[in-house]
Image (cartoon, rainbow, N blue to C red; front, side, top):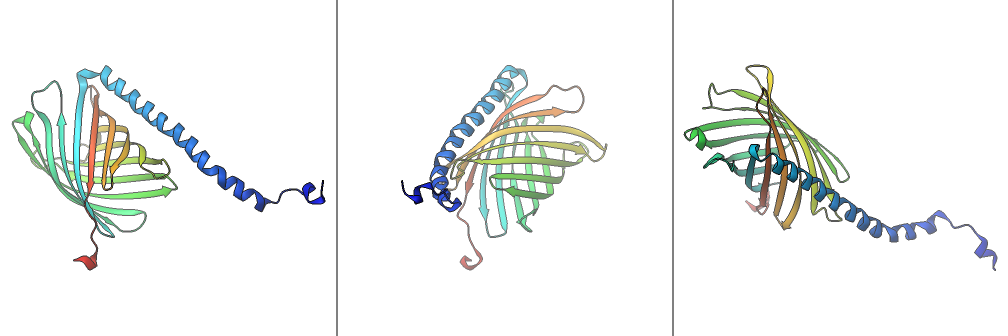
Length: 247
């Protein structure tokens, strides 16, 4: 045995070995994360099925376009109650997000909603919001504060909405996401909360520029009304980004 064989390994000699094992560790982490995400979502599916008398299906299709600092979204929404013959709500509109910095985003927009079960009542919804976003590796935390007016619904109430969302990217390429959040609605006229929405779900990339969200949502109204259990999907289509020099 030579003298060199008795030397203790240097820390620089350990780096290649640890680096070689990193893909294996990431693979094991993915195998653990994805089943947990699927199992969690399936648990909420069974909860919604058990409460079928207060069940709804919410579907959304978003067309999105962006520049370096501005994102424009045209949403198309439909909400269905299987126990009713017509839609609960059909809505569309446009919202614009302006990224002020890495932390803050300013949003303005307008939505038009039709309520078929209320004699096709039409509601106009101007809105404004400020969001704070914090990113830590694969974890994204966002806090949004939104003000909107429901013009045409009763006395055209103004309400404030606060939503906190946590999003975790899964997989080496981040093609899967798991998210959860909670949103509280406050009625400005009565100075009290009127609604709460708890949501958990996942997101997958179907193709370049197209993603699918699937989620469970529990809506709780103030008073004695029973909770509404919602299963929903959101399809997002990202249009080709354009830049100032392409105009």
